[in-house]
Image 1 (cartoon, helix red, strand yellow):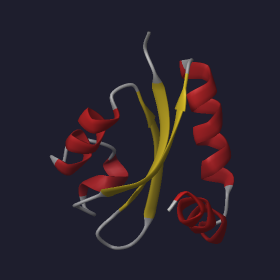
Image 2 (cartoon, one colour; image 1 turned 135 degrees about the vertical axis):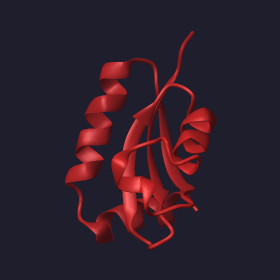
Image 3 (cartoon, rainbow, N blue to C red; image 1 turned 30 degrees about the vertical axis):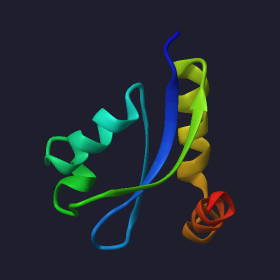
Length: 83
C-alpha cells in the first residue's frame, strides 16, 4: 500500500516550506539536491521538521493545503507539539 505525506521543512534561512510526497526521504533529498520546489532551491539545506502520513493522495494534499494556510506561529506550534 502506498503512503502519502504532508510535511514541513525548515530552510536554511529559517523559513518554513510545506509540501506533500509519496516517498518522504526521496523528496527531502530532492529538495536538498536543488531540484525540488523553486522556493527551496535558494534556501538550502532543508531539514524535515514535521510530517503526517495518509492513505490517499487526496488526504495528503488537503492537509498540505490546510497547513499552508496556517500562520508561521501555528506551524511552529504544530512542529513543537510533535517534538
